[in-house]
Image 1: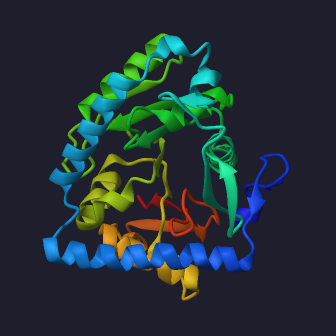
Image 2: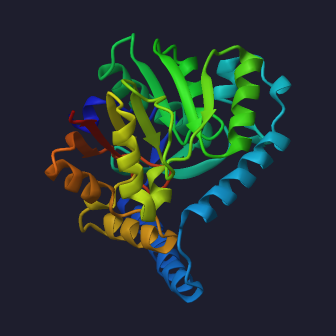
Length: 302
């Protein structure tokens, strides 16, 4: 499957304007320069994106979200899932360069949020049956799951997160809007005695990037949990090539110390006959021109 089969994009529908080639290259050059500076800083500070750093950072972040968002300000789940005002900012007016269809567009944050859940919803619908339980690992406070619910995805949904603050907020939202989504704690890099994922469709979304030094452990833990299938919606450097945009992306991932080994690790497990990789391809969109989303779908081999 190609990403063109997952979504179509009409710039007029989303009030998007494509950057011309000169402006697109200028934008990429700025991103590349920042990435090179970031690499220098990271190496000077000897920064490594290890588990403790990630856990502390996100636990604090979700706590700030709890404090800054008032659920009573939203009239419905749809209004909350796709807000026009977010934490006091009019995101219909907040324009940024986003990557869509492999091109750079000026588009509002609100319209991009409306667009970027569609491929996720389409792929999950295509590769599950209504009876399947769909679980997001590293769900934060459940934004993706609430958006899927707002889009009327028929499957039962569950979210698992290592941040207790994330789970507290997710349950608060769940109760407020009566969405009937199950949320629970799970640490991807620790052995999990419970088998909450057995036979379920599991997905991650911009999560594996944070776990560069723990990818083999995460995959081992997933295999032991015996899910039906696992789908990673995560940037995957191994699928990037040598265009200027891809080189810029690789530099950015180096600067941030994001994972660059997910597909390589999965292929090693595949060679050991522990799993089968069913799909792996680029999705052509991302929250930044140097941050393209990719997709990998695999299933355990009994």
